[in-house]
Image (cartoon, rainbow over all chains, first blue to last red; front, top):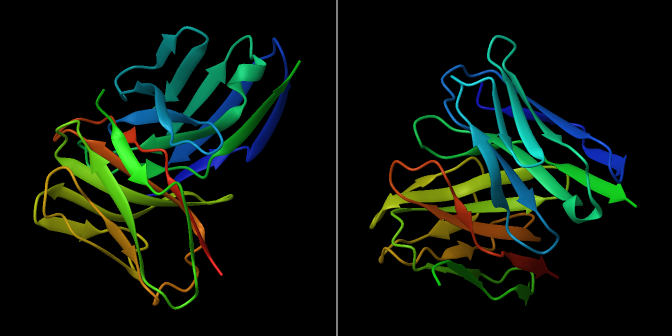
Length: 111
Length: 112
């Protein structure tokens, strides 16, 4: 119930393409869904986040799509760039309590 | 500049030795967290603390211990009871009631 399932484990995209990473959850009490970006040897950094009362949130080339009925949310990276190559984690939280993280997706964007 | 400092960046220890990882924040955050990161397993919560002198076990607390004597500091001790301690350890903090975490740059522990 407390798990967040993330897929795919790795993703290879050509420069300019769209990267899509998916996450699913079971616990309907989750009320905050962030995405974190991590570069090798660094700590994760908050990229974008959404609440369940919104179906989509866009910040620049990054968009979260949220499907409450399916209990799924996804990260879309438009016009993917080599600098986007990193590991991406989805996460979920209840009332600002501890974050539960997905297993991560390693994205590689080739020129 | 405010942030979280983890030290050292790399740490090597012999099997059977206890080792303490440092985590200091100057963000005036109330809550602090320790996560362990292994390839393909994401970030797993070891311990967390929401106020000074209080902390709770996370999902994988066995073989670890923590203390929270000051708001700014949340050190993690990896004891000899931890069966597979080699990993990347991440410390994070957040304001009470705030959803966003700030992470440190991590400590890579290798036990030989």
